[in-house]
Length: 225
Image (tube, rainbow, N blue to C red; front, side, top):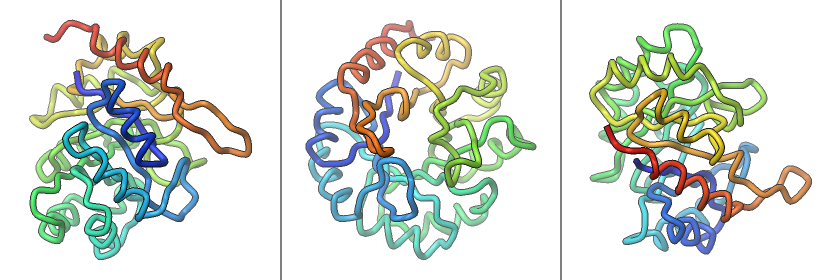
């Protein structure tokens, strides 16, 4: 079971996550006001520090393909995570974007579970992306994800069963429910942001490394099928 954790805010924090067994370390290189956002320079430092330790993932909520590609070239993550507003970057856009990215960079597309036509959209994006991430959606945060709440896992299970690429389950997952979520959905991987944070006040946070370790233990204890 692959474990993905968002969001590291420094190279040191990214390495600390990898040392606790995280496979994919998520970064948020933007200035639009997302939780845990960092500069592209700090994200690039984290990507470099993670090489040989864990895979790096950098998200974008942008809609302009040139801007997405510019950020990807500056940060150089292993995986580019597209999680803008629902449908803002279409499957055809993703196909075009792939040709604009550095060689070897993979694409993870977010699917808002519970949105209209979510299963059909997942099937379409599965034709052009390397991974899907199934997440919850709220208008409180720009883009898909960072909602901190679960969604209908039965819908996620339908998506997993209907596509042929790896799927990561996200949305309100913690050490307390990750095993249950895996049993219900049978994803390739699981993701946590909000419930593995330690709040610092004023909307700031750092990763709670004990909570991360517990999440990793809970996820990896589930027998593979």
